View 1 (spheres, helix red, strand yellow):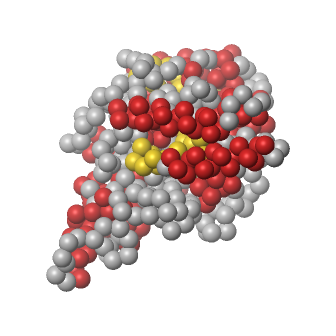
View 2: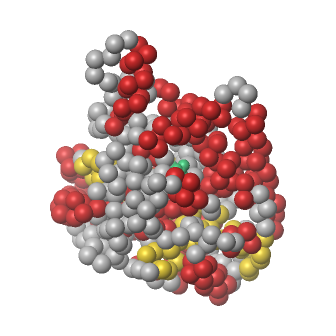
View 3: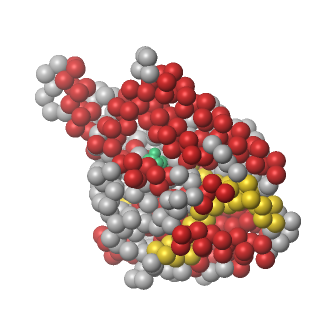
Length: 483
Ligand code: GLN
């Protein structure tokens, strides 16, 4: 049962082959048995899951038939869930029970999903390996000594290990696409504004976007359908109709213009990954796509710009965690300043503190123009590069990451080494564009992802290309040994 995709589950439930309660019970038992190896969950919500599964079965018995009705999922632990711990991977929020559901959580619940739990993540979504979590690292099911990617590492590890068919994630600089690549999943970061951020604990507000992690493009289409849409509670949500993503899967790729940026293949990219990317390009060519070399000349400035803008926004967003209003409070504060200092000093881990300091510095008087304003200008240049490229091509293709998964701890002494892993993903966040990562092969037994980027609101196009690719390849069907 645990090998089924969301699409297969929907068919099985509709054909009454099994009930949502049966499926949910099976998966909860599987999680209890296997998650101790993976550490992919921060909280399990068995009671909620069983009551949602019962309700979904009752709705089906009454003739309802949605694709998500009775489907088991999990939420990254930064989506607020009413009455349930929402930790954001931090000691700061270890005791925080959200007073309301995030829009994404509420929408998916209304569609009939069954929430099995809340998944592990880098603290406040800052990281690329799930190593900064207060709850310890999540493990990659392809090699338990390796990271599953981050920051949505728990969602990725759980789905890759077949503990459940799909999960939500968020992507500020790659945190859906990069863990998808490192665990052999398909992950989609939608256009900025496509999925509501209301109730999603903020890291860098102008970059954060929620999206699906699943095994196939077909499943990403199903989950995204339940997440996307205008939300008056989020001032950056865009009032644009949501297309039928599943209907977009089947278009032909004949004549599709795919751009491959020459800058993607510079030093730093593992040559074995480059090889696999070229193979996937050839596969798409066979399906009718036309390949063109393009250039994104400002890409080299993306990491420095991102690592000014994201910490700047984080330093502002995280100022609310002061020991007074939310979460952790230090013992016996002597005065207000002591309360602030010790609550934040004890509640935040070292990577979060590092980013708050960098961000506060970049925003301070005298440095604002030199760093923050400069970074915003680079951001515009990067967007302009994409706009020029999309005049010539429909899709941009390249690697999702320069390397496969690394050993847990291998980059801990050098934060910049981890930042460099984001080189291919962060440009889409800086420009607000949608991006998808899909399985493209293996290096040393570890999965490799290929990234597709599209113009604004063309999530359907990304899913279409990925689905056609998956109809003709079987990388996405490979299962890690032992799971
Ligand atoms: N690795 C990037 C960072 O640490 C991206 C994280 C994310 O997308 N949430 O900022």
